[in-house]
Length: 279
Image 1 (cartoon, rainbow, N blue to C red):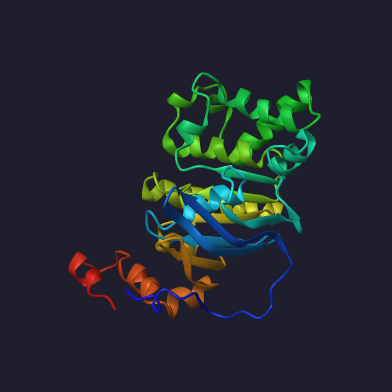
Image 2 (cartoon, rainbow, N blue to C red):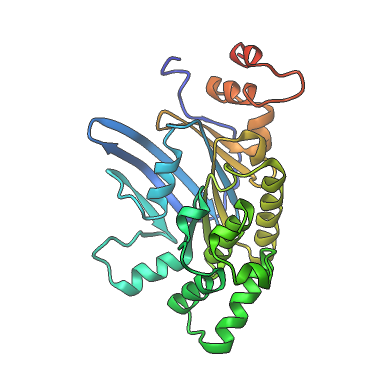
């Protein structure tokens, strides 16, 4: 595929709200390997943006830089117009950013303390980021678990006693516990069965409607983005090759790579050979 094919193709939308989170010219190298190269992202308050690409496209590295878990080699991430706090920033400043931007990972089991009961893991986050204590803290933890569809039985369980979908609900409850303005979801439904994926997507849509939280949704699955994101960015080999409204990009893709991705989505009559020959 030529460099011309990989140019950043934009499906236009002229009106754009002021971004709550913005990445400009993000670049990340690991030795001689360029993982992310000149990526720009913009996420408005309450919006939902999908970053889509195959494994190795740079989407997860981009998400980690946006969330402050990786330091960009070049470029900048701005939160409400301010640069992200570095490691030398005051604790209060870093805590404020952590409260505003939370992340949900692909493997909830790895992100939860395996020796800690579910309700205690929620209470720990609340006690760290809020002034809630005692019975008020306990009530709030129970409310959060109820919000994500978990009850008393799951609340008193260890992560190993829960299903994959239940663990992901716990991870989401922990992330929204501090009422963040942005939730970064890195392949948050990729490891789940299709029926459980649908449940988690429905949950995410409901949470967004209730709270006005913004989502940065990282995924390789084009089949799911239209159910949760209004806007989409397509990445390939560390670069953005297309962006725009999700419906427009999926129905009228302009970049050859985007057309190839869409052609690879299984559908009735789909075969691997057909996917390989999609223009």
